[in-house]
Amino acid sequence: MNKARFYERTDEGLLCLLCPNHCRLQPGQSGRCLSRGAAEDGSMQLYSYARIVAANVDPIEKKPLYHVFPGRPIYSIGTYGCNLHCRFCQNADISQQRHVGSELTPQQLVIEARSIKDNIGVAFTYNEPGIWFEYICDCAPLLRQAGLMTVMVTNGYLNPEPWVELCQHVDAMNIDLKSFNADFYAKICGGRLETVKNNIAAAVKAGVHVEVTNLVVTGLNDHLSEFSEMVDWLADLSDRLPLHISRYFPRYLESAPPTDPAVIDRFVVTASKKLKFVYPGNVASSQDTLCPACKSVLVKRNNYEVLLNYHGTTCQCGEKLPFIDENTWSAKERNA
Image 1 (tube, rainbow, N blue to C red):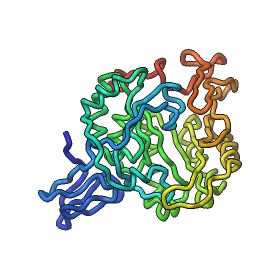
Image 2 (cartoon, one colour):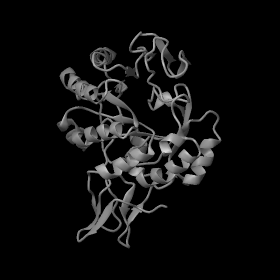
Image 3 (cartoon, helix red, strand yellow):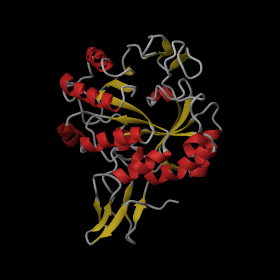
Image 4 (cartoon, one colour):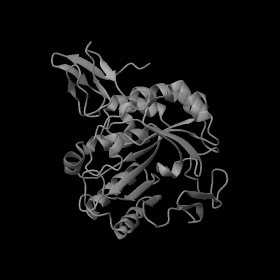
């Protein structure tokens, strides 16, 4: 354990191959993500391995994941660092600077997660969990053996090989699709749109439960035409892919005014023409889950108060329900 992967030694120092940043590091230097760096002996050092900066028991809806064990809690942990640098980052206090944190080994994490009443698993969240690759790969098999889920809330910005490996370990993801404009990703986030698109598609193909979040930032990615292209692309993957359209508030380096709630409502209407499950975020509009066939309310939500109006795996009209829950999920089956 605690051994770095996805890097190589070159004449110019270490080349990190975990994400598309491909940081070249001399001894003592850390990558853009802050969590990995070159040691004096020429190896890759994992600064943040098992270092916990934030830990909470959250409702699963807070991730947001609306189709995974609705109404249940999940143990949520994060470290520091991120391989993107979005101007509007909503968690910059931990994602854009290094912290000491406290140690929690994979074995200790499982013990902690099992001690929480009704807990469905562990969500790796708050900062970017993709840069915690080795820790997640060490924790996930132990969580699965304990009958617990592994969840990620991620920007989806990893190279293909580590991403595919993570998909073998992770049961559910909420993936940020920040824009459908390549220039936005490059100039505002420091990343590449195509990488994120490819990884969303790969996760869906691998059988991971995927929900997507689009944070609508005033004046930056609030163009209806671009958003419509995003919706068309998601619908081609699956029209049952849940989409969360969230209102932005000024944070970090971005001072644009908060998103007009009317923009969120308009985007929800547009997305609902192609996708069966669309949810507004950070606004007062309804976030209920409706049966796409008969429109009956399957899950009633009031903030984080959740009322389930369904039983089993099908709606009363016969439509297959969209949820991962005790009726459909088995750690043993995922382990097969």
